[in-house]
Amino acid sequence: MTGKRGRGPVVFLSRWLLGPDEDPASLPGRARRFLGRRTWLFFLAALTAGFVLGGLGGLLVYRWDEWPHPTFGLFVVPAVLFGYLAVGPTRAMSVGAVVLSAATLGNLLGMLYGPADLEVREYLGWTLVSVLVGPVLGWLGHLVGAQWRIVRGVATGAAAAVVLLPLYYGFVDGDPYYADFMPRVTVVFDLMAVAVLVFLCRGIVPRLVAVGTAWALVWPLPLLHAAMLLVHVLVWWSKGQW
Image 1 (tube, rainbow, N blue to C red):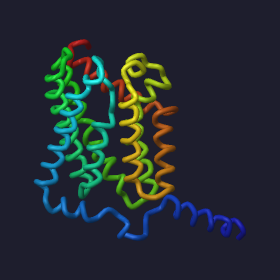
Image 2 (image 1 turned 60 degrees about the horizontal axis):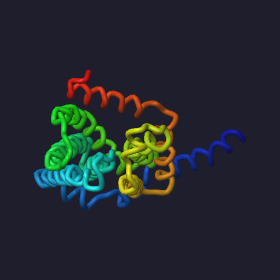
Image 3 (image 1 turned 120 degrees about the vertical axis):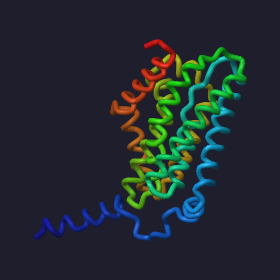
């Protein structure tokens, strides 16, 4: 009898901390409903945003010095954001692929106008990555707006972990490429991108879960690092180095 009574508060507390929101009005609604009724506008906005942001990244990446500055925030956050605004997981995955593919194409065109030598074949690999990773990012964005607190937190943490990978490689793992070619402006930009993702995740507890999930995926768990290895394999293959 005492055991049952003791479990009551624990169950209540766990449901309150990690369970679903009871107030439907707290869920994101107006923008999602507006864009949900205008599919063409939604995907046009996604295509334009991805292309413009990718193009600006390509144009500006060599303006500070002669080296590229690795950043994932510029590509991850738009795909997650449009997935967040999508009605349903299928549309979220589709728009994630559209945004990331458009950003890749825009980045290619922007880099073509830069002063550095560019291996165009490398973007074949990045296009394949966009087609594969874009739906995942869009799906995570959709889950960031989920009703369940635990789902919001884990999805936000997973997306934030992808953005934080270059920072981990450069400042923790000591990878020469990331350590040498990441100026302060890139670091600040990616940290702001993570802040945007955390802001989208409603609630204090889900945000704490997001922080813990991001730490686990970047530090002790090898899942994202294995995925990065596959990305590098695709890029190396497209350049004819594999």
